[in-house]
Structures are given as C-alpha cells and as structure tokens.
Image (cartoon, rainbow, N blue to C red; front, side, top):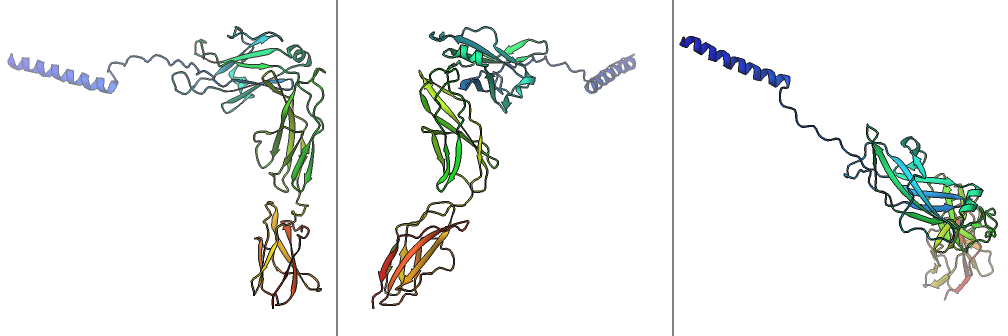
Length: 364
C-alpha cells in the first residue's frame, strides 16, 4: 500500500510539472489589463495671422504636429476656419461669436495649402464681394481636429483671433522698370493714384520689392518709402526677377496691393569702375611712393599706374594689374619732374578715367 501511495504522489508531481512546462510554452500566463486608446486631440494654434493683398485675404498659421499629450500626432488632421464680419462703422465683438465653420478643409485638401507645417489659405474675393467688405473688420479663428475609428471628432481649442480691416487698396502697379546703372540695378515705378473701387486711396505707407533668381530662393521683401529702389546686392550674368507692391495704412491697419507683373533683367559688366581718388606721392630719395583710396566696388579687377616725365609721352608703370592701392616707382632719376595718375579696371577689363594727377620733383 505504501508503494502504491508513493506512485500516486510521484504521478501527481509529474503531471503538475508537465502542466507547468506546457503553460510556459503555450502562453498560459494571465493577460495584462488592456491600455485605453490614445486620444489625439491636436494642440492649439497660436500664430494665426490675416493679411490683405489686393482682393485676396491670406490666412497664415503653423499647423500642429503634436497632440495635447505632447506626443506627435499620427492621425491626419482637418482644419476649420471660422469668420465673423463687423460691418463698416461697427466695432468687432470682444469675444468671437461665429459658431459654424466658414471653411472646412479635409486632410486630402491640405496639401495644396501647406509646405511642411506652414499653411497659407487664400480667399480670392470677387469684385462684388470685395466692394461689399471694404471698411468691414473680419475676425478669424481656426481649429484643428482628428477623427477616431468610430468617427468621433477630437477638436483642438480655438486658435488666437486674427483680425483685419479691409482697405480699398490700389490695383497692381503697372509701371515697374528695371535699368542697369553703374551703381546697381535701378528700379522705378509710378505711385498709384486710384483704388480698386474707384474711391480715394488710403495713405501710402511705403512699398515692398520682391526679388527672385534661379540661384537663390525668394527672401523677405525689401521695404522702401519711395517709388524707386537701387539694388546694389547682385551678381553679373545672373537673371533677376522683380515685383513690387504698394502698402497702405489706415486706422492702425496695413494692407498690400497685389504684386505688379514681373520685370526681369540680367546685369552685365559693361561699366568701368569709379575713378580712383585721393592720390598722393612722396619722394624718399631713392623712389616715389604712391598711395590712393581703395575702390570698394565688388567688380574691381585692379589698378593701373601711369607716369609722364617732363615732355615725354606717358607710360604705364605696372606690367600686371595692381591688387592694392599702393605702388613704388624705383625707376625715377634725380632732378626730374614727374606727373602720376591712376585708373581702376573692372574684372571684365573696362578701365576708368584717370585720377587727379599728382606732380613731384626729385631732388638732386
């Protein structure tokens, strides 16, 4: 009987050990409690801005890339804009009151308005709609949202309020001209005199000059208060494309006209550098030392030094262009009269006129 009891106990432990091994390989461990699904509610937009350019209203913002939990969004977002209109002569409300979306943009439509996380949405008004809105104050708010698998909307908090007063700006400037001058590319145009609706223009605040080239992307526009601009920062044999717009300001609001038609120009190195100035000469007993003011132009190739002795014909003293505004004449003779002058030469080989001559007599 004792042996039978031992066999039963041994069988029991064998079966128990076998079940443990099977559970380890078959995954009989208890399952961890399920994690709740992540709620991807987009973070709030804080940089919404409204800009008027002619009859076009632009809304600029940075789209959220993070959710409120500070983790990156993995769901596509939708964008909704809300708009409130305060007619001319009325103050906009302190709080935003629009409840229905003015524009809804699904994820598939955002690509045409975005570059990276930057978004620009343009509302091109018809002439009739623009005339109705002139003088009105428009307020805009944006929300971003995602949708769960069940279609439930997770919306961000409303963005900052962007306001703009619609001004009656001018049509695009039609008289932009670009001419190459020795000092740079000279841009000029006529100041606008009428508005898009034919009414009086708001005060002109200034102008914006836009420049592009194939070798560089467009930078920020150049501001100028006059109806002309001299572009000194250019390179020869490179094509440049210019546009200009007028900026108006009224009652604390600025608005821009639409840009002019583009004007293209390729500057060539056809002008000589400016005439050198400040030439001085000094006799040391063995040589004549010449010094003059350096020429700051970027296209400078170097300098030439000329000398006339008595009634003899003038001669150039340097065999190669001088790269610095100094020269030592060691070929002078004692007891002679000399006259010196200097010219500047461009990289393309165009030589300037002669500097003011400097006279000297070497002592015996």
